[in-house]
Image (tube, rainbow, N blue to C red; front, side):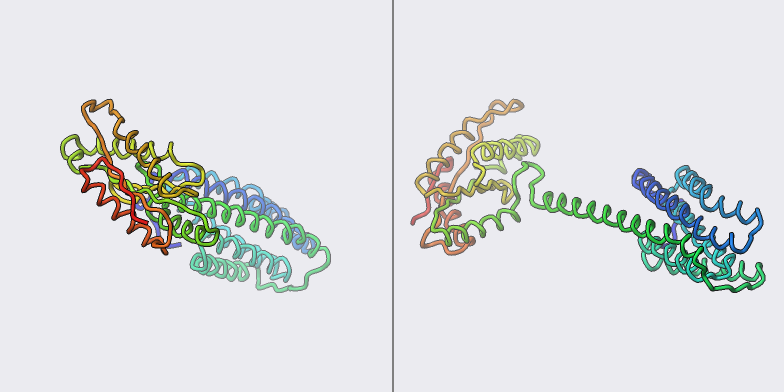
Amino acid sequence: MTAKNDSAYDPSRAGEHLRFVRRIYQMRTLGLGFGFFAVGGVLYEQGAPWWAWAALFGNGFVWPVAAYLIASRSRDPEFSEYRNLVIDSVLGGVWIAAMQFNAVPSALLAVMLSADKIGVGGWRFLLRTAGAQALACLAAWAAFGFGFAPHSSMLVILACLPFMFVYPMAISSAAYGLARKVVRQNRQLALLSRTDPLTGLQNRLHWDDAASATMTHCARSNKRAALVLIDVDRFKDINDYHGHQIGDAVLRRVADVLQRAARMTDTASRIGGDEFALILMDTDADSAQAIAERLRRAIEDARFDDTPELRCTVSIGVAGTGARAYTAAMWMRHADAALYRAKQLGRNAVAVAEE
């Protein structure tokens, strides 16, 4: 974790930071609770005094609650929790020295404390906490008289088994949960990246994919589809005279007409500022022209509460898939050419591309 201070704290992320504190509290409670038995097996064989057991009990069952309270009540819970994680490593170093480097619980303690640091803050944070752990271990080893007894008895190994199995599974479950959350968020972002926020229609990115997929489907299945290209007439004048708020209402009304007309197999998109596209599956150019006329009339008949005098019209170009449209880009050019002819006819008209 990079250096951080209270002045860098972002209050808008307080909820996220508190969730982080609660997640670490759950893992700390589980890890130190099972770690109590791993270290306790060594203390039992050593005939440790009462104060050592009291210290172990405090570390295993009191410290998780204290750490949670300290972090959750801090002005910057995230920074406070990272500091608590450093303390976890320091205490772990002390217990490794107190166990005189008993091999199995010492290695288990070091590995588990390293795993959660990597999961929280990556390798950079691990290096910081590992350094603090090593210094604390050396200091405690000197204070305890440089005892060294690496042999692990069967009793100690059995005392380590709950910690050895349960804590890694808990870490894996937490990692899996976070991964699932990331997948869900990525799906939401993908959906947002393909949706026009003003109208709720698919945006140009999605339309490009849908048009290409439609051309491929039609070529393979020998079916037909039609592209209806719609442009709001004199939209700049609407914005200039009535304001952008009314202009947005016009775009939403056009989008609403398209959504009502589109079937489950069709694709309605906003592909530009005032330009829309509707892909009609299993539809030839003549049928698409009839649908386009209904769309034109529905938009022409639309009324706006804030501006009752406003009349909105659209020009529409229609192009079917056929021998002259090999790609989505060619299909778009044919529909665009038809749209241009509709505007030449005086706008508020429908034109069909030549087959």
